[in-house]
Image (tube, rainbow, N blue to C red; front, side):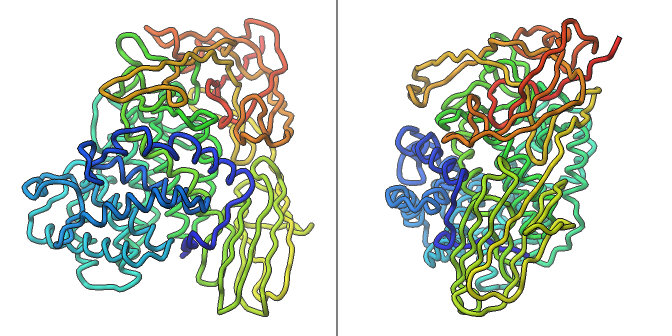
Amino acid sequence: MYRNFNYSEITPAGWIKRQLEIQADGLAGQLDKIWPDVSDSAWTGGDKDGWERVPYWLDGFVHLAYLLRDEGMIARANRYLKAIMDRQKPDGWICPCREEERKSYDVWALFLICKVLGEYGAYAADRRALDYVRKAMKNLHQRMKSGETRLYDWGKFRWFEALIPLAVIKEESSEPWMDELASMLREQGADYGSFADTWKIPVFSWQMHTHIVNLSMMLKSEAELLAFGGEYKDTAQKLYNILQKYNGTAVGLITGDECLAGINPSAGTELCAVVELMYSCERLFALTGETKWADLLERIAFNALPATTTEDMWAHQYDQQANQIACIKFPGKAPWMTNGSEANMFGLEPEYGCCTANFGQGWPKLAMNIFLRSKKGIIAALPMSSRIDTIINGVKITVEAQGDYPFSDKMKYTVTAERPVEFEFALRIPAGAKAKLNGKTLSGSMAVLGNLWQGTKEFTLELSFTPKLSPRPNRMYFVERGSLVFCLPVKAEWKMMEYTRNGVERKFPYADYQLTSKSGWAFGFESDNLSFSFNKLNDIPFSESHPPAEIKAELSPVEWGFLRGYTAVAERCPGHRRAVGSPRAVTLIPYGCTKLRMTELPKIIKR
């Protein structure tokens, strides 16, 4: 349906470029300099992690380096890629383990490194990388056909990830073994539909089929099979609906700390699940053309992703909460379903290091999907600033988007063709928007701007949204405007901790932090009167002290206790909904700008 442009054709701009720059200067951009699991990885000849962590890190870092055209970062990325490819065995095996360990090696890491190499090879036009992927995938086919390799654990529950690099090489040159491998992966892989009933009542038990990252990844599985003759029945929507009904959040996430955690705004969601759900949405939109997945992508990217890292992106959480009144190391038993006591702290490696390695894919892949190539031309999939310089039917084409959406309601598009050429340029319109193009009202979720191009043409897209109170389970509500969710910010006191554990040092700027609340958080909505306004966009796009948008609301204090046994976790909802104080005017700010927050609140019952 749609395909990504190559790195050389994309120039990010506006606030997303700034966010990429912040990431490059932060933890994800510097991880190979400070974290032994990357710097001394077995993938490059070291003695540390030889499984998912380096592939996870490269999955974001490679895109980041090339999108920013940073020669130093590109050289660092290429050193890792070259070291990995140089270690590929003659038979195609590419993962770092001894010969006798291959049978027991969980091939999820193979799927992941091949995805990294496949996407890099395609977007950087690196023939060598694609050849290595072909050899590795063919070796996997041979091993699975002979029975030497069978899917188990992570490989079994992430089987569809192998289809991504397999489709890349199949598109270039199809061979029968590729469809056979896809079939074997599907047959040995987990059938998530058969587990749907177990998602309705979360239990304190660690299970692969309720693991939040697996579930966020699996939504794209049916769509990935399209390249291998599969039929798309929108199973993703059916399964997502079940997950949302019983485990959903106001920002489109699924609770899971680390496995499904039910409907509770104080439950957590693992950061890996945030970026993997974003990627699933990107793939679903590209493969099916269904705009609902781009709408969900916006909701997650503009809210959940920035909220779970510090503004300088040097620290991150493992678990984020919609109602988050503290981020501390819990004494004794943690309040999570299956995670430990440090899971919602901000730091270098809270809980597990998978998120440390993996969270960096979020912003670069979002930037990669602002514009997409269609069979007919170009689609502006996300109304964000960027520029595409490409060739269509032998003619040089430039498409430039300028604007601060979602922190502005106006986008300007400039299309330049070097000489007359036919192609389709289309805009996706975000759900719920009243849209005008050059003053004329648009309808539907997609607008085609033209088919014959010559010289330069300019278009102004104007969007308008109505802020509203939207319902949540347990008679709770949240505030939204378009793709942005707004929260009551809770002032935080930050406590930095510098120490060394298991040979891994935490020190500023990659220290750990505990946050405790310094302002009240127990409130309810006194009315549904909401007054929205934009502010000037700051150098930090998701700044808490200078938020790019705000909503004035009227709140009243309520009695709202803590989760039993804790003094830093809000109960699911207040015991009653009567005000215990006078109404007050309060400024709500975007969810993505907050670190401590209250998102879901009750409506005050009038006496």
